[in-house]
Structures are given as C-alpha cells and as structure tokens.
Amino acid sequence: MTRAALALHTSQLSLFDEPASVPAPQIVVAAPEPTISLTPSAPAVPISSVLAPAVFRHPQAQREIRLKEHLVAYALRRARRKSIGFVVGLEGLSVAAPKWVGIGEIESALREKGDWILRKLAEQQERQQRLQAAKVEWRDGTSIPFLGETVIIVLDARAGITKAGAVLNADAESLPGVPKLTLHIGLPQTATPEQIRDVVQSWLQRQARRVFEERLKHFAQQLGVRYTKLSLSSAQTRWGSAGADGAIRLNWRLIHFAMPSIDYVVAHELAHLREMNHSPRFWDVVRSVMPDFEHLRETLKDDALPVFD
Image (cartoon, rainbow, N blue to C red; front, side, top):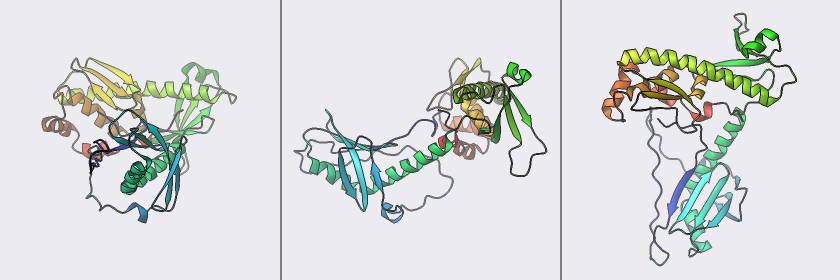
C-alpha cells in the first residue's frame, strides 16, 4: 500500500512528444494519481488570483522566465530525448530538453503551462515550509507525536532509566493544554542530538512492534487469516505490505498516528491474505472490519510525520 507521505514528491509534465519538424506538436500533461475525495471538488481557481507575486529559484538555475507576474528561475538540461520534460520538485523547476529544441520553443511551452507550473511551485514551497516546521530539534524538552498524542522528551541520567533506555510517564496532574506524556531517556544534559535521536527512535520502534503485534492478532482473528511473521519497515513510499507467504511488513513510523489509523493499515495488509489485489472484493474485506476506512486512509498524510534528520 503506497502512502502519500514520506518521500519528497515531484510533479511532472512532458511536452512536444514529436520532433520539432512536426507543424503542431501536441502537449501532453501527465495524468495525476487517483485520489479519494470525501467532499465535492471545488472548481479550479486561476493561480494568478491566489498567489501573490513571488520568486521561485532553482539552486542550479541558468535561465529565468516571467510567468504572469512571477519570476521563475529554472535549471535547464540538454538530454537525449524526444520531448521536453518539466519537473517541479522541492528545489524548484527543472527542464530537460533535446538539443534540437530552441530556447524560444521551451519558454513558449513554459508560458502555455504557466498556471500549472506556478501552482505546483507554490505547492512545493508550502510543503517545504511544513517539512521545515516538522523537523525535530533533538534536545531536552522537544516533543514528538506518539499514538496521536504529544510526548515531551526529558533527559534523565538516573541509573534505572539508563538500563531501560527510556521510560514513558503519564502525569495526570498536567495543566489543560499541556501534554501529559513525558518520555524520560537515560542520557545526561550533555548528550548530543544524535544520541537523543537514536535512543528515542529505538524506543519508538520497540513500541511499534508491541502495538503492531497486538493489532495483528486482533484483526487476524476477525478476518479469519493467519500471518506468519511481522517485520518493521523504514520504507519511504509504503506504509505496509503483505506477502503470499503470510509475511507482513509495517512501517514503524505508523506509531506516530492514533490507533484507528494504525488499525486501518493493519487491517489493509491482513485483508491481502484473503484478496491479493485491490479489487472491489478486497475493499469489501477491509470494510467488514473497518467501515470508515476511507476517512482513516486520509489521516495518513506524509507531512504529519516529524522529520528526524
């Protein structure tokens, strides 16, 4: 099962699929991946009406173009290909074009698809800001999500905690609006960010295995299936997978989400042991134990995860 969020996504479109000698080259925009929408789609809004004048600059930019009132500095690469390729990523706009296509033709194509390019650049800029905000500063007092709640990291070098690595405490007397969960890790105040990260990550992975095993047993019984083993995954593009031999792999970063979201992924992978596909029958199996799975699937957003590195 693919996820929306742990890889750095790019948006692409390809132009001029025929050589320049063809009188009217056809412009082809890559179809977007299918999405699940729980509300009616709003009509498209021109990018010029929602985006203030801005500058988008790729770090390897060699050329600039003005699209509407926005300045776009893009990286141009000549390649052995038959079409022009546009890629909008976190760094900005990059263009790959065959040698026989002139700059005028490239920039004409850029202007023709200007709204699309600007919209994708704005989306990537917003995504970069969210990722930056989600980056964890590994120090005493930092916070991470755990099972849908906020946990405060406390450096505590007491010997008992050092042996266990980390101990989770719940303070019932916490003030309203203040996280009540604290994770005491056996490190001194002089610990490096890398040391803190490694201890916390190790604890999270142990908790992930414990929680996943409990939920696998629960849903395997409900679905009438048998899994053979559980492996933790660190995949960048998948929340989980199931093998025909009954092996289940689950991404340990799921431990950041609330239990219903974890249950959806667990039920999804176990359902594959009955239907090794994504047919209507497969979704009926998932629905039999998770009637609101469509909503839960929407909670698995990649930018909801803290950035560890």
